[in-house]
Image 1 (cartoon, one colour):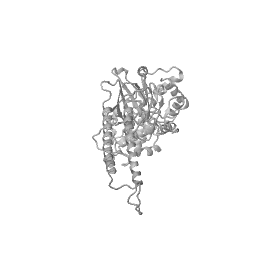
Image 2 (cartoon, chains in turn brown, orange):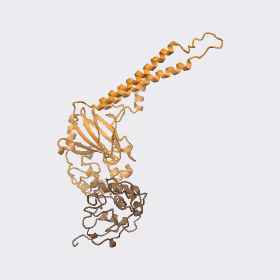
Image 3 (cartoon, chains in turn red, orange):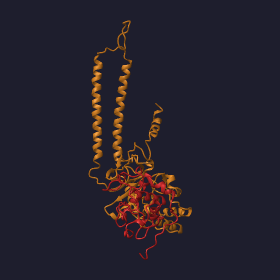
Image 4 (spheres, chains in turn blue, green):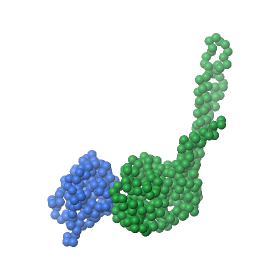
Length: 148
Length: 339
């Protein structure tokens, strides 16, 4: 791990950000996030949530935290081992909408905000038919998963 | 009788039958055929309408029964007169002939629309992709190195059929240039097509004709029918990469464009901006309008659009970036080099 840039969260996205509540359970923002997910090629690494070169987004493990603020920080400022920083490449609103969509992949938002059908071809059940996955914090993630 | 010639153009103007975008246009082969059929329907149905009204008023004026004083009555018509039977037979025959005539006219119009220009292969092939709310235009040629992208503007050579492949990225849209041809839908997940045969050089306007969301009304495009020579010149200039910026302000705008949000969606051929989700800006200044006909193209509207796209066209996918005044001037200065 030596030589890797140190992960840091800028003060700009702080815990308890009011935008978190605004975006998280909003069907429009989740749908917009799904569009940006395709536009900005998130699926190039994360696929449609199942993970590939990048970690899966539809499971219960959150390497850098599963709150909206953590996800937005991951998107805007990047994370070591490959996640690029999107600050100034996309707008903050787009980052919040992406975070709302990423949370919806593991059925975190309210049922009435979740999409009943994904835009892409999919052989998994829609999130509306899945139970909300428990968020495993970083310090409780299984050993080895932090290397992904 | 003196007023009638003056009244006709007025009525035509009221009906929108003139100008850039009109259902009365005859500047395309299909539009002319459809207009002929429309005229046939108008005339035939007008004649029948007059006949029905004549019968109705005749029935109204006709006297039934006898006068009480038994004097002879010139308006009295016997109930079972031969003239009425003849009139009824003629009427029935006319209705049958009229319906058969209109059906035949429809059939032959449909057939001639379905067989565009036998023996005349389309010389232009365009892939037209509908998006909320703009048109992505991709010209394809035998030599793929000449292919280019543009947006919200189509150029066609007069007199040659143009093949247009219609696709959609999000919802159903409909392609309609009323001066040239009828409508054709753009449906996500499938490819539709339409052949346009423009016959007259000119500037026309097209419009999305299937409600597609908030800014459906601001989803227009320009169609330029050029002489073959003008078209070849336009084609040659469009397949060139963008010019390089020269002044410090233009270079600053270029740097902003390449390093910030702009290049995440927009492409400029010949630079490292190659994204495919927003309109291609390689020859932006050659276009007549911006934001799919929302604003005319020019320095002022470009500033307005980039500073606050959500104010100009609420709901558009172009986001508010929050540029400061210098950044805004620089980016517009750079965009104005894209001729």
